[in-house]
Image (cartoon, rainbow, N blue to C red):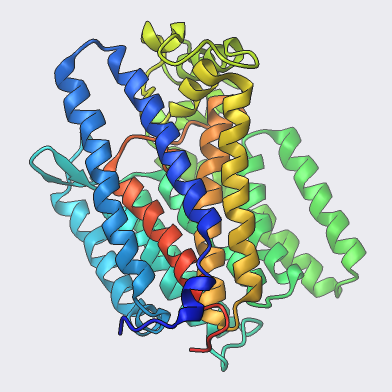
Length: 411
């Protein structure tokens, strides 16, 4: 099972591994600076030291993922998926959290099953759409593919954890496109989501509907198809008030604050404002490690977890932010090159799923720190404090490196 050939190691992408290790190192510097601001040796020991230990354990987990043949993940994809669903259901009944059910608690360690669900969904989704007999233009196959993503996504919404659920749902367009689904069908699938989001404002809803009408007109589709797509989008817009009433108060506040329809100076708005002040004050070279006033005076909540990017921006400046984003970009571009060269359709789709998951985290997390995306609680891969999230992202990188070593193999 673990047999290797000389050619396998020649194809090992050291650049991706280097980028990941460097991102973790930058994250450790930012976490250390953010935690020392609390001036509590116990917190430094419990958090910073744990992050180092979790990274070392993650290296072991990632090594196993790299060594296992992709055929192992192909054969067991549905088993991993079933295990992920079982854990997502179980956490709703025995999970911990104040007013939520997101994680299992083992002493001081908290484990989020939604992290396993991310990996399991990528594997199961990729296996289903990679089958030679699969025809994604047929309603049956398309519905099953969508259900594979929707089931864990809706279970995560129930926790509630809207941010992670969006990560799961974000897998649909890229993997479907990479699998060969026509762009128009992807447009039909994605447009109701865009309409739903735009429905919080009458004007944005109207602009979205007009834009959809434009796409339908230039695509020269039959009138029946046009009417069906319009009906689907109008229904999505009408459904917005129903879902809105089911959201928790903090979720409504985040959405309204992001849209500029509500001020929240003591809550979400405060976090975003302080984050923007921190990043803006970093200038080009930053204030220096452990010299950031917003960080060291603890004006910024969650500065070692969800808002660690703000610490990087304040203390390492525009240069530091550019380095971080460049490392992510290099990692994801090289991963897509691997996906394009891979002979196995399943393996190629797995890489696309891994890239989508990491990229979605990066875009939303960095976006929320500068106020152009809602505050969703999505961590920044490899930099934010947290064991289960770090392990998940390292497994995703491990899968990418695994496929890279076997890019010319057929399953």
